[in-house]
Length: 291
Image 1 (tube, one colour):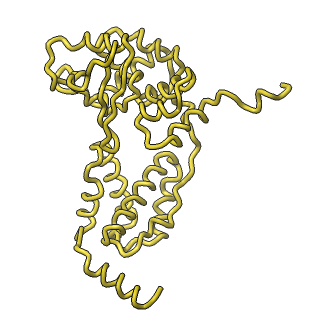
Image 2: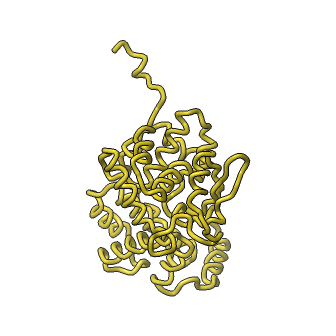
Image 3: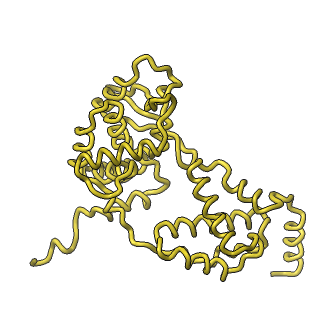
């Protein structure tokens, strides 16, 4: 790099307006616009790092990050998310000019076993969960979680204005991760069951309302799904996200294109959706052996 170019770049950095003047302000800027649940999780991740190192962000070195990563070794999946969050924050701080170096760039994200296949229910299990649920609101909630492949936060946030006719059936408009909006067309049967819940509800009223009024929250839906799984005799920590995974796998099995499943789930790329084809492959070289 020429001396002139180096001097110019140094001048540019020195004259950049200060975007943040403290770690707390940087963290707030980084979290801005993220979902509330994501903000809580990421804030907790960063606070664990700061408590572990006892240093402000600008004093961190690679050894500090590696030491922190070692404390997460026993919780690999959660640790992977925490490391990814830390790397994201440090990268953000460097881009803003708050951090002179992005020390997180050299930190490796741990590789973990992909357990997606363990969180995909069979079609019969999903149908049994729905059939054995007596309360109509909860039954339709399970149907919509499965049929729309919506994230729990997206389905909880639905208002009646988000439910619209479409041809012989209808659709729900979901707003969620990455502040992205997508419309998902439902089958005629699911749409009819959903409309039957409305009664005299206003367009701004919650589709899935709690007994105290307002929207069901994610924790309530987690309990409802877990209870439905237990009634169906399904073991494991079944969550609403299992319905989303199951939708993707079952739709692919039934001939839906990977591009269509990507759009329905709101994935950013086909590579993300292709995980489902690897989790439940339709073919294998093992099937071509003599045993």
